[in-house]
Image (cartoon, rainbow, N blue to C red; front, side, top):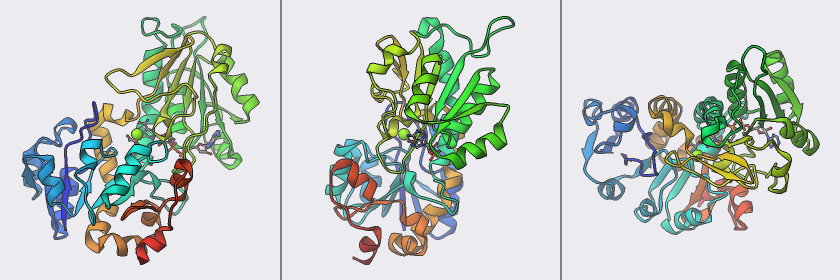
Length: 372
Ligand SMILES: NC(=O)C1=CN([C@@H]2O[C@H](COP(=O)(O)OP(=O)(O)OC[C@H]3O[C@@H](n4cnc5c(N)ncnc54)[C@H](O)[C@@H]3O)[C@@H](O)[C@H]2O)C=CC1
Ligand SMILES: CC(=O)C(=O)O
Ligand SMILES: [Mg+2]
């Protein structure tokens, strides 16, 4: 198979879909790998690194999209990239379709087979291709939130760890999955007073067992959420219902109950965000204010630490990328229910029910797509 990896074009996205290591493995498995010139530079990989791995360097994205049987990327294809996708081609990348009707329409029109990293599953019920980026975004969230809390950036002017004689910042994390756990650990490590909310009692039990003493836990009822939010300096949104649009957990009306200058870091923004007032921002212009409350809503947070993120993502995607290349998408998905769970679009039809529900569209099952 010919595997193509274009340079990412989303603003301030410095990651790349294939590392030289991934290219090397694909070539060793008998595939051709074509990489757009400069695609890896933001993550610290030169064209020469890919050539050494056995890949071919290509001048333009148009040539990559025209020649490749499978496109491997990081972020959802942008409008200009979507026009270059074609029937029969495999797209393997993050998609986040539930809050994105325009992208969905274009992917359906392309006829391509689109497998979303964020809905691939694993044996323990986790999301193995989301997890590494959730680890990164979770660890970044208190760091960017602490910067936003600084007075000159619009925040309350509260130091995360406080100082002797002055108490620490209060941080509330809504959603205690991968993002939430990593965010809570780092915030607690910075000296903040941290509480994690979740709706899953087994998850709260796990967090209490492992991290009791480092941070507190609370059940995410609406009442507990607003009570903790009122006292918070920083609220980190980290909920997920896989594939679906994020539930809105703090309304615009409730912003007036928060402390002026409090900071909302909405990591769940790629699924539409869990605060009513969230709208996606970029690394170039990451924060904005609504009713005196600061918002940080960057939808590709891991792009800020592109080298760490690219290597972490590449480690996770490599076995799935190889299965798709070695077997073709049908057999690879038929053999592995966890990869099959990643199938979101095939030949003009949605194949993921939560996405279809969020957008009010029809879907078919992934099994029907494979059989068809
Ligand atoms: N902005 C960015 O750059 C990035 C965003 N993300 C996003 O962060 C979000 C969280 O991802 P993960 O931590 O990997 O997911 P996860 O599945 O590990 O954790 C989500 C948690 O939310 C909980 N939850 C669901 N509904 C809830 C509710 N109403 N109230 C409280 N808790 C609730 C679940 O029980 C679960 O423990 C996702 O939307 C993901 O796409 C992930 C990486 C980067
Ligand atoms: C998960 C995701 O959307 C990202 O890493 O950008
Ligand atoms: Mg994202």
